[in-house]
Image 1 (cartoon, rainbow, N blue to C red):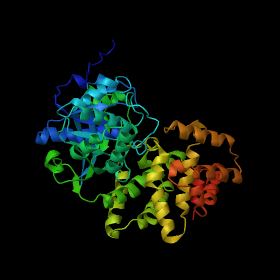
Image 2 (image 1 turned 45 degrees about the vertical axis):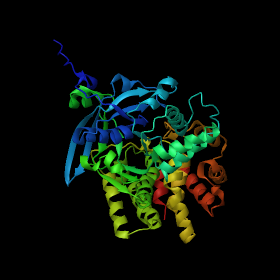
Image 3 (image 1 turned 90 degrees about the vertical axis):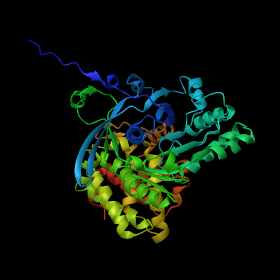
Image 4 (image 1 turned 135 degrees about the vertical axis):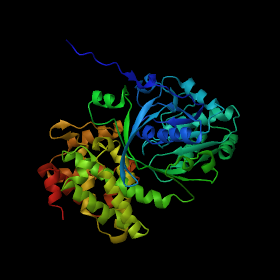
Length: 482
């Protein structure tokens, strides 16, 4: 006799709360759900923030969030107060989803919500940009800043003057200031009245922020096992480490309207974000970006596998301590403590952070997270570290799109993927051919903000390691590195 299969509820069938929408969130990915939405949930429950979220969906066409009525689970695992914790949180702050490409009017109507107070975004480093191709205000803009400009202009037209707080979480320097700059460029492109800029300065505050939490995504177990452990079906469950930090640069009144600290969350309010951002972006994110391509090409799949690997792990530690950390001003013991903490977080046995997930938009990440350390090192010593050149070579080889004969699921702009695909098709596999590939990549000023072919020895060293990786593989090439 066949055993009866127990009936399990879906997560959206559980009891949930309704909140007035006070937050518009650009982005539906794992990070915002496991970081910002989780924090809003904590403030709702512990200090009565009473804030719901409207999610703007622009990349993915998945209906999963709508199907689950905005409800999902965040599983937090890691060390808290020297003890390992594993805790699950049901998050029900998302009240509705709008897709400007499917319903532009519904998206714009969010601007007229009188309860709206906050705007949060995470569109990756490549997302905060201005495009002069968005020639009309009547069609949905191609970029995140363009869409936000359209939203804010609609609010301006409706004469809604209550203050808005904009908290971008993209890992670029001065993310709030850069976002505002893009909006002003759109205002000029679309010939907005001068009163719009006056309204923007008076009623919209753009904060520079820094975020830090590893959100690894759906647990790396069979779905049925995950659902059995939860006790309900949740296609959007995400795992995250316990550690979390949000550094916000802005006026003191922010602490009152967003009471993170009162809810027991790890928040720093500051008048100067730079020291926090520099060490985090260069050490943690820089190591992640170098690790993603090197580790994945070495046949590894997770951050923990990479940092614990005898060859790849040593490479990552050396690039942190010997190449990245010396380029960061500040107290050396404090930097060493931060680096040690980062490595311990990489080793977290409860988090399976996938290297392929970190590889998303690797070129823009390399530009923001690794290249500044390389350039600072050259300014200080005029010497180029072989580990930086190897990281560059691994990045280029990764975009060949093959690992052990199997296709790598590259995720980047179509322009970059097509360029690299054509480059590898045309380039020869001789030493001179590899140097030619490197020269063409390094010459892409729109990727790097400058022509990198002028950096002494960078073409030669990167080309050398690219040839070595192709001929001998990642691990043998690393072992030969001085």
